[in-house]
Image (cartoon, rainbow, N blue to C red; front, side):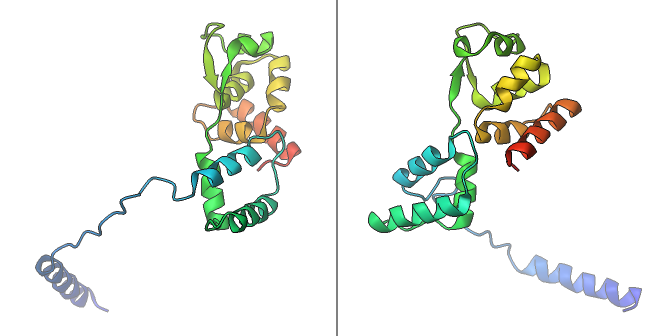
Length: 170
């Protein structure tokens, strides 16, 4: 195709786009909301908020059996992976944390509540070895979510990734 033909083709396309109005697709009413039944969401959260990462294929089988017993549509594997991102992490009372971890949360008072992923973030980024050791043993989802947060120091993130690799969390 020569440059001359390309210009004509582009002009025809431009005219066609100007003649035809842009049709905007209507968005779904439930866009941004889970279409899973609340009892399925609760069950997913209960299975995921544990120390070690469960087998997601085994979790999918358990959910499918649960859904069949309760006449609910079973979630697809893709829906299960999306639901993992929606599971709410608990907030941790800083007074319940070890002293080394509280020291890494240097800007918070003793009565504060901190999101779980932030405990991991601050313990790895600003903590002493005891804080790192404590954070390395926290539930897998806390570590996974913390790894997605911005603002990591490169060596701290590398250490978190090493801990996650050792524990089989990826």
